[in-house]
Length: 116
Image (cartoon, rainbow, N blue to C red; front, top):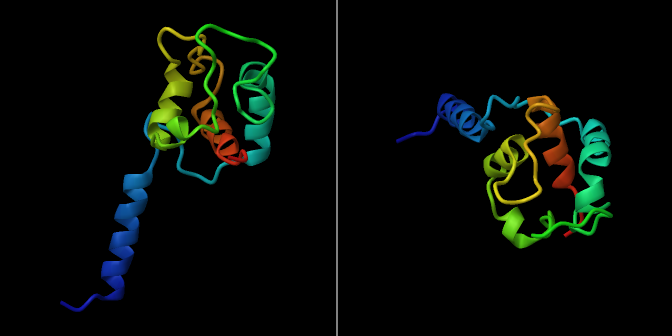
């Protein structure tokens, strides 16, 4: 079977559709400066400046180290859901009431830029 330009374009469109985040989050390019501001305002106190879980506020159980392989191996859709819905039996609140879906997408994009 000969692969044509139409096949390639259709494959790219399907790939983009499959990669679209869940929860109604936009698939637009993330706004990293806004993600950084959201992180500083809502996340830094617990997760620390580089996301290592070493913020000024401590909890039991400890907050997640956002640079750990345990966190990074999860698909983006699961990480977005954790931010959106919170995490049961932890101090991680649901941010769906305070942050737009786009802001949640932006903060995750910013978190994924942290050094590993």
